Image (cartoon, rainbow, N blue to C red; front, side, top):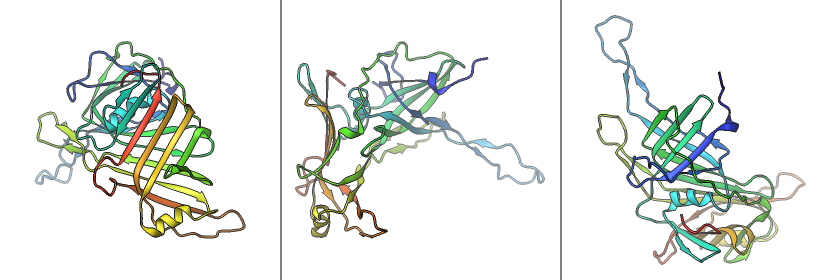
Length: 313
């Protein structure tokens, strides 16, 4: 009997035309490092009396389906997760394409995601998936990955794939050394690490249904937060924190002119941090930042630009 292994696991995704209805085709084989999607239906213990000390049979509660996947930040496949998080981009170019995603979309697309273990065989199709959170960390070295938090409507299990033959992507990953952080258009020096965390604030529509599933998912108030840890060598960030003003922050990975990923937060606010001296080594300061709409109240909180050779998302 074959045993399931992560090395043989498969993940395929496609955007839905109708929420909660898995497409029959147009799936993409997605690279991933970890998949923790699943559904659960808890048991409710009986509260009834009159049958002695031994309990009556429990009752099934409503179904909850959600989880996360860890994916590489690459030139092509990562754009599919960006579309899930921010909506369809505006694309320009003919050979070298520029895809511009923006926060604040009034509606977001849903996806069907199949996680397969062909040895068993076991194929779990998660329908009505929407991206709730998206985040990653930047450092000097290491693998560049992002964690995608998902909320789904339902899980359907089968012994054969329902994704057909998914299309492949050209995998070209960004390296940690290709990262950069800028403030107000100027490169920030002495940045040790940075974290970026985006959340859509998804709200499950928990209506009464005979199947115990949610009726849909509505986007709530979005948030874009993170942290920057810097070796304390100048007061550029500290001065902004003390002044109580905002500035732009830009987080990017660049391979060349036509291959890059850039997230620009247009109005970032910094708290005044505690600067402690913990020994003879270098002194570091951590700024837990928050982004918002620009002070004019117009535009959008952040813009994400992905440059690659893929024509559409």
